[in-house]
Image 1 (cartoon, one colour):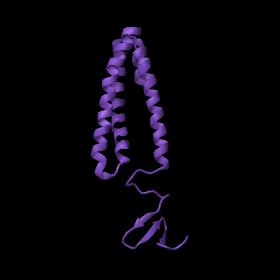
Image 2: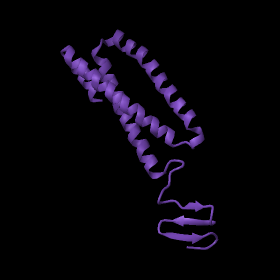
Image 3: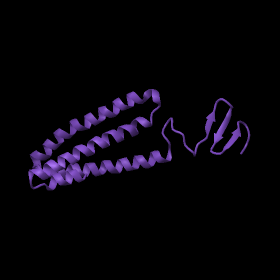
Image 4: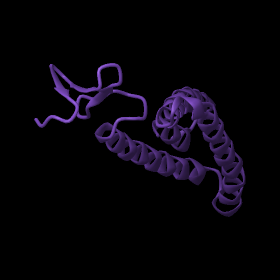
Length: 139
């Protein structure tokens, strides 16, 4: 988001290069982090497919953004592209935050949580933190 602001307000090529470097660094981190989150919510045997779908949608978004930027340039010039990108980046941060809150309440598949019991198939008991309750008994 701040890299788009730097590009939008850049008066010299050196500031534009700094904005581009900041954008590339941020994109690399976000791409990996969101890919990890997307894959984490699938069972282990489907994680490869989930990563492929995530990458395909990132590629699709990059393919759509070029023509959209071209329309903005042809109508209003170069400067508004970076404001538009900053607004989209802010909406992406908001969406990521909402997804983070959703997944922090409900653990991903395959992860252990202190809020949910873990079934121990060897003994037939449900294991809670610091407590073991035999199957069929009441708390």
